[in-house]
Length: 517
Ligand SMILES: Cc1cc2nc3c(=O)[nH]c(=O)nc-3n(C[C@H](O)[C@H](O)[C@H](O)COP(=O)(O)OP(=O)(O)OC[C@H]3O[C@@H](n4cnc5c(N)ncnc54)[C@H](O)[C@@H]3O)c2cc1C
Image: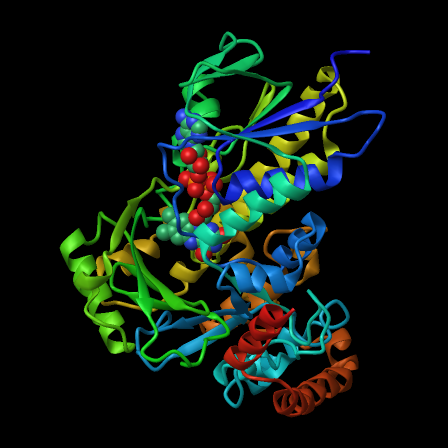
């Protein structure tokens, strides 16, 4: 047999490194025929990025696979439940205007495309309220489940808000103490192996050599292995997505028992948008903006005004942190025996919190498809590169959708975002189709599409996009069934609202019970 892949070395101990370690160790170790040894090396000198607080519902399954209980996760990471995103002032710029992109699919999804039937009633009810009860839960700061609902199960689909530093700490403890991951705290100074061949080993500042068969680059924006060693080119996507900076602060609640929002709130501003994420202990707030359309001082004042208006203190006292990034990704993600996961593979503004889910998907791909020997690695890497390039393209399409549908005229940022040359062809073509029919499953051919037709529907119709549906025979035949779904959704909303606790109250109870055990 060819050289077996039995030693995996992960470089980097941020969320990407530890999530990958957890996914691999929980699924690959314990195979007596092909044992896999996992080592994670992280530098004591290079801090993790320390942001990244919103997840997708996929995180529930990821944590379950890794073997962390939901109670442990919620109590250790100051985590809260996230049921989607509320977009404020995105369409016209009016501060009262808002819509939700919830995590639950529309009623009847997969059976009947309710977006087609909603068009007749759009002056009376918003799309999200017609097809989902989740916006009502978010409006009322309600949790997506009850105390008796089992770990990771739900009444309404949800992901999390979490403290990134505490999350990496919990994963590290779990991976090293329960999953057998070897942890080395040392700075990687040299990568051994010619640039036109495999990496053999890594040398560290304290003189240790770490050998491996597969190296996973989780070194964040440095991209030490894929870029630094192999020089894999960066593909800039700044032509479509302009945001390249963020100013982040941690905001205390005005009182300890303040309600915890059950969604991320994203408020459009003249040169970008502000995220607002409620954890148990504090809020995470930040302005993501385009440095070509504003400067740091104006960005600071924009964030300051927002924090003040939402009950926070003066932000000078909160040590705001600026983070710069280039929107884009590597040309390839897996080259020879090196694969980049996390920010080393690329980064796009966190508008739909799509970074951690890409880490989960990449880690899961390797756990499932891990090549048994070096010979089969080329085939696996080819598949990985193709799939993940597809996913980056789809994320760019979906993020761009939010901007190009906006009618805001208050700054060049919004006007530039609507320029034809900034819109990917793949998105422009779909938009043309959706002028005559609503997005549907057939528009996205893969089973695990990163953004589904449901997500497109929520954003398109939340932003006021016009679809002129043809009322053909098929449409008319199912009109009664569609009406039934609308009525059932309305009835379910009333029932479910009455049965769910407040987000804060459920989290307090879970944490209190955990302390008593
Ligand atoms: C403003 C902002 C907001 C974001 N919000 C979200 C969000 O809401 N949701 C979401 O999913 N994602 C979000 N992200 C992305 C998310 O933060 C990252 O994807 C996630 O934290 C993973 O980062 P990482 O582990 O790749 O990199 P990092 O956290 O930067 O970790 C890099 C690691 O590499 C190590 N390292 C570097 N050099 C060396 C060396 N020479 N030797 C050894 N080790 C080394 C460091 O010590 C560190 O441990 C956001 C990002 C930004 C910038």
